[in-house]
Image 1: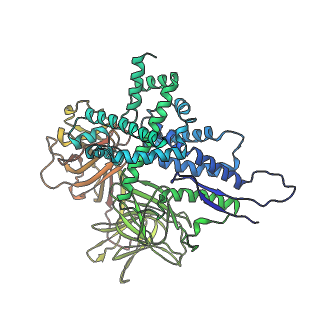
Image 2: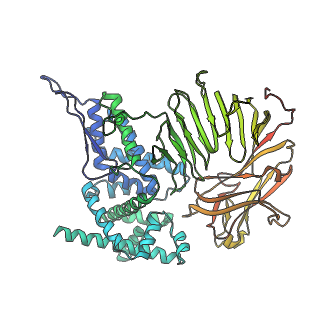
Image 3: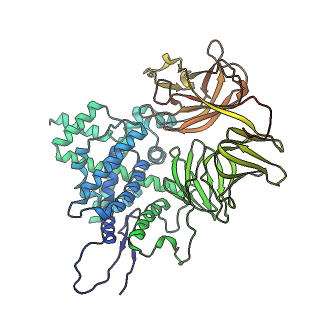
Length: 208
Length: 429
């Protein structure tokens, strides 16, 4: 057998996560030490496992969806380069969030925004062990959410689109819809709650 | 935690992704999260659903935008990010390099340059198109021969050739193409402006920048080339040759000189000098109309409340002819407000700080976002060699703007290019 590169897509994330599996030549008497390639492969695998949590961690701090995606990609490239020198006896997830913290602090400095976010200590406690970020669970929830959003009346769908697709704040949406800022704020809060209830109900029904 | 405190903490949690919490509110929320495991669980679920809401709407939006994605429906930028990871694998393991092969196993072109910096307003994209396929450019994205790149208003792009240290900065509202050549860098500039710092080139394969009528030949230099209502080449270091495309005339332009095309002719080069002035004064006019009066570090422009911007520059002491004038103001965030849209116009101010009648000195129409440098090309003939008081106002119907004032982090700037007084000649200093 020789070197063989197998390129397979990780279960159902559809985004950044892709696997590269490289079986190695076996020879008698060999002592199994991780090569650089194996280390990189393992680091990528760990990244795939934790990428939803990491994205949530970044997003929780900077609350800018596109910037969070960009930062996630920068971190992906960085950790791949550092894989060769990483000690895999250490847990990877805290190291990943540590790298994210550095990038987040730098982002606040460069963007000039005020770092008003839930503390890193609390984000560590809230997110790093949460099971809801597992890839298959996220994908299932996403598809249910699509159906729930589609079932909203058109005016409510428009407000959600202005908020989440166009990235507008409540004040701007209030100007566009001729409603008060407080009314928009309450509507968005209410819609998010009803969408969550819709998704949970569909999930329970699917589980039956 | 009492029931009341618990309800309040939950309301803060719900508000976290909708508005900025105050310092006190954040302290309260952090304390509540530290004390209540159930609240931490709830936060994780809220955050997960917030991410999914963005993803669901973003996916829908991307499907109807002009930028197309790969046939297998993966985002090309994510594939590029993975490709960077694969490149690292290749360099350390000599593994088969999948990136260089398409699905049929055919070799695809190698990149010739890479994006080193960019800015684009949220919702817009700087795109590269080749062979009918469009892709959005991000930091680190490769550029290939044949790519036609379009920059929307308010954006900017810097890229670096991989073969050497040549870098280019492309300004807002520009369009250019990287042309296929035999190892030489050729750029077709359809519209807009670029600034280049060019590493020393092979004399047999000089870099060229082309418009429909002109050609700039570059061996190693730093220059600015503008192809808008006028074609103007300004050389900051080294020397550049500016030719007619039909080869009839060529001009050699040395450092500190500029050449321009007027009508059908390339005029002989003239010396120039560049100066950057900071505003000596700036403020919001009619600021008493603001409910929460803006601090001195903002210039607020909003026609609904009759708020206008005022900036003042002292041009006394400059006697040379001004050939270019660019007013630059930085769009900044004010609380949650991060963008504006509309038509802004710049006027000379009269005695009562109202705009003088007549046409504006400069204007900008479009959208802006926080972090963007908004540039007005001013009519240099309307500037006087004394203190110039300028009014910036927004047409009715626009969304308000927030700029940094001269006491803010990014003072307004006036970039001037002067034609030095000399007899016209070959451009040799």
